[in-house]
Figure 1 (cartoon, rainbow, N blue to C red):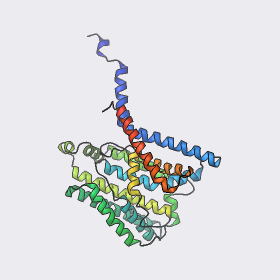
Figure 2 (spheres, rainbow, N blue to C red):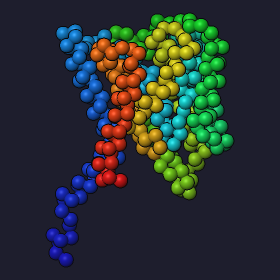
Figure 3 (cartoon, one colour):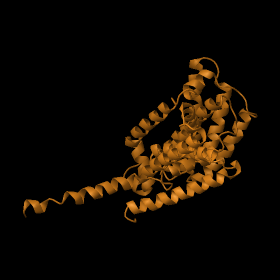
Figure 4 (cartoon, one colour):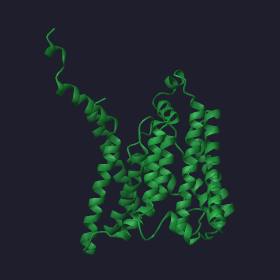
Length: 334
């Protein structure tokens, strides 16, 4: 056979590889595209109404308001990748927010120890979810809905009425109101995700999300992986509760309720497959910012707050349907 006949044309090998890479990351690509479009729309509306581009104050406020949702969405992503779902997000945030408002006092070391204990409390809540889902073989939506109610009740018990206080230094460290330094924490989260994705645990999470029985046949300990996934999720929800308390400079045992649904919205907008096995925490972070930007756009559009939920839901449906269609086209209609 002539040498030129043995080597396939370069154009025919590169295109399938590129199509495969795009197909595998289409969710993240669309999330970045939607986020970019929403930022442009918001900036244009801001210029029309304020005669200037958004400044440091607007950027900092947007970042600080998004931090709790972004962290909750990362935790939700890890659970969803295992073909699960966690509705206890709001309950964990409620409880940890209430605990922070009461016990975050004193010096730096005291606040550091209390913060660690609060994060561990969130981990215990996630561990309980994982144990019941894993050993009980129950539907995650049922289990986490039950623990949501229990955690909300505990939060009310801890802090019956809004109150407490967060030290100014703690607030400045987590959500600096003068600059968007909270982005540093998101950068650390993204780096942590890269390490997690390449770790044995991360590989196992994706494996059981794609095909649990096949993963078990290959030696993956699915039960242990699910329990760890829910535990990590609970810890991230607790961190979200700390950021929420720092932003509000106080506690409220009901302020985290909305994060149950919005964390799922952020996950979907971030291109994470709700049937498991495909997605990225980076996409979930983008989804969280998209959710915040939608609220900002509706505000500057002077939409009646009573109808904001309608438009948010409409946008979500359009984004999901559009993303699914684009994904099928990129993957060749499969």
